Image 1 (cartoon, rainbow, N blue to C red):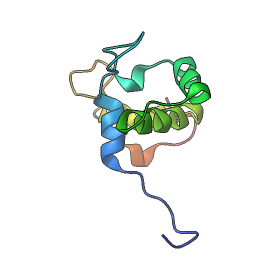
Image 2 (cartoon, rainbow, N blue to C red):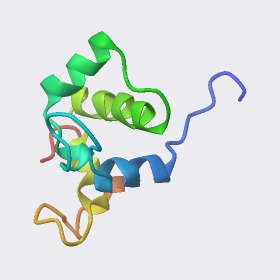
Image 3 (tube, rainbow, N blue to C red):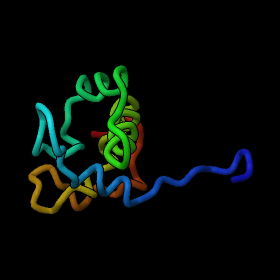
Image 4 (cartoon, rainbow, N blue to C red):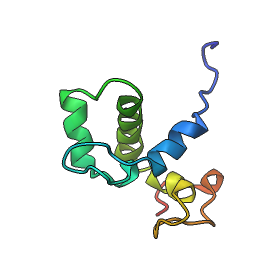
Length: 97
């Protein structure tokens, strides 16, 4: 990729973060997007799991640390009570909730 060219997020990564469940540990069965930020900080300090899960958790840490969770509202599973069909991520502005 040439320097200065914007990096586009992989939409599948964002979908997986919003819909995939944590496979182990204290929060097993909870959707990744719903993991508490201190748990993600713990992984960041001690090391993420290898593979796809580690990639998703590292990306989620950056999303949460920068207050960008509203970007994922429209990507949640439609059966999730926090799903917002009208939440268009392209219209997100910093500070939106």
